[in-house]
Image (cartoon, rainbow, N blue to C red; front, side, top):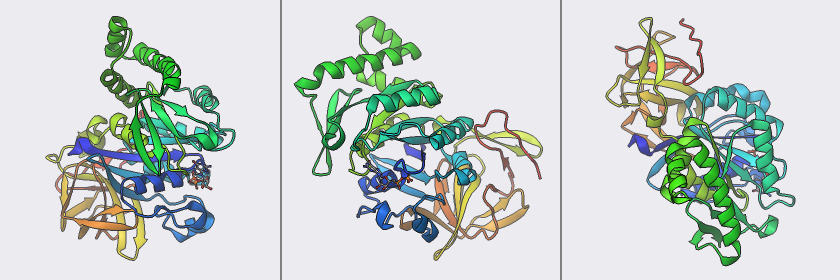
Length: 399
Ligand code: GDP
């Protein structure tokens, strides 16, 4: 189901912990069975050897994992400023993003540049303040620096339990429960007596910020002096989708703390392909919209091409229609047809073969020999040259 897909990027300043977080997400979702470590070069998303050697994420890779009945397609975007072209290419195909901040450093220069790029592409975001275990981790200062330098309305959804080495869990301020990490597992429990007052105070701050911006939440707030968990969750989702608020979560990727609540927030607050505006393109000289509907003609954008031992993997974001294994597609700009011999879903270091792929999904195909990054692949009878999705006043150059 398309509502169960999240096409997601992780954006961060280099060193904020994006690779480690990606790794932990793959581990938590059962996509990998061994935790990779950045410092020993075993992370699975950074599979390019040059990237391993340099210890930074240069080449974006897309991996699929499942969480709570949802397919999360994780597009690993590079954080290094020299490669911002690649960041932009990846942003074209995302429906939402996690922005990772360092709990000690707060907003760093590259966080600002990726933030602006995400603004440009209208990508809804949630924030993950990472490295909560580090000495000097300052929760409120990190949130203040996000507010001051990036100007979103932070909607802080977690009250941390313990600091630095003693960071053992969070109070989820929406559900008003604790999530703590015991023997590497996330365990839910009631809010302890000692944290009740502070949790209530923080929940009230969250409710006020949400009520100010969301009519249904405001109505409940005025009537009941509080907002129910269900309305609060809906409001947080709506505010995330519209970009009017930024849900802020906390954790430590390295210590594997906060990953499950983050995944729950991805599912709850970030949009599915059906929640984002339809993609636009030029068909026969006319601006045409395509919806994330399998019944519409096939249209996809190539956002990554990687030479691997399996073959030339052409990564596609399918915007509309369906594609079957063996289908002939048109590379619109190159005016060339190509055969899609195989369709793969890539899960970090392995893949599964698919018979078809459908609107909203991200897959890799083998067969197209020359389709380049940025190419529009379409049903030959309905050629659509895709624009950059969701950019204000997009410029379309027709070849
Ligand atoms: P990236 O450049 O954003 O991909 O960051 P990495 O994932 O490569 O992490 C940079 C460094 O920070 C590595 O040495 C990680 O082990 C370390 N790191 C990542 N997450 C955490 C965390 O939660 N706590 C601490 N203390 N270190 C972390």
